[in-house]
Amino acid sequence: MEEEKKKRKILRKLKNKYRMVILNDATFEEKFSYRLSPLNIFTLFLSLTVLIILMVAGVIVFTPLRESIPGYTDVNLRKDLTYMVLKADSLERELALNQQYLDNINSILRGEDPSMKSNDSSESKSGQNAPISKVEKGNGKSIEDSLLREYVEREDSYSLELGKERRLNAVDRLFFFNPLKGTVTQSYDISTEHYGIDIVAPKDEAVKAVLRGTVIFAEWTVETGYVIQVQHENNLTSIYKHNSVLMKKVGDEVRAGEAIAIVGNTGELSSGPHLHFELWQGGVALDPANYINFN
Image 1: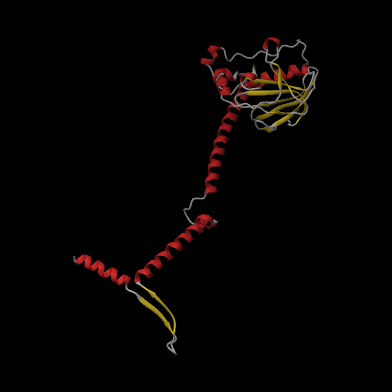
Image 2 (image 1 turned 135 degrees about the vertical axis):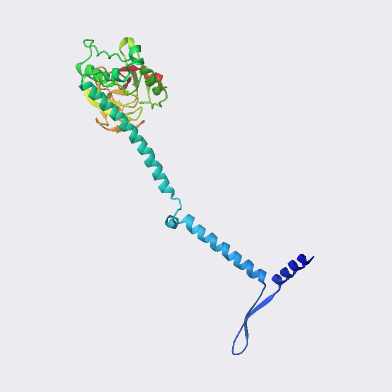
């Protein structure tokens, strides 16, 4: 009972009304008056405090002033840090691959077989490290075309991957862009030495890179006209023949789906505007239809 009386007494004091009056000191004339209570004053100060806190929080959150506060997380800094970490990881991987490539070159200069050195047990037994035979000449092909095919096989013979099966599995997981929208007139047929697919398309259509890579060949040949060749990861090489114009040169980096040439009718083996597209891996021709939907 006593506690309830005390509570009521305190509540009564808080609700007691007071009048704040402002008088003229000379004439005692009332200039302003306002009725208030301790509860009203407490509510007013509490509201002002909450308002000031919200204003300060808004300034911190929605203005650049937040970056001056120690310990406040900078979103842009976090993005930059994430980008740098990913970039460093990519550079580390590229350095490792380059070091492997240089080791293979040193082995070749010493007269050693780098593939036999890196795979002295399992792959040597399976015969996957046997050297790839050179392209046979004298089958009606020009010297330039034969040299190009021999160059592809020689460059791809020393793979940085561990084995053919592993490379093929990696290729199956890649997403290939369609190099040209058109009609397939001749499919891949190794029995007739047709190592690619012929696609007929209207004149001046753009030929696109199927994957990201680096241009390693961009020249004119007698039989196949303007030819551009792009080296990709997983020891993959794509070749685009019979172009009218080459839009890239040797050493250029290209993105997947980027235009690299214009379809044409160049070369002795061409009978109309079309693209002859080939896909090679480790010196072995692949059927592009197994990886790209040309329909």
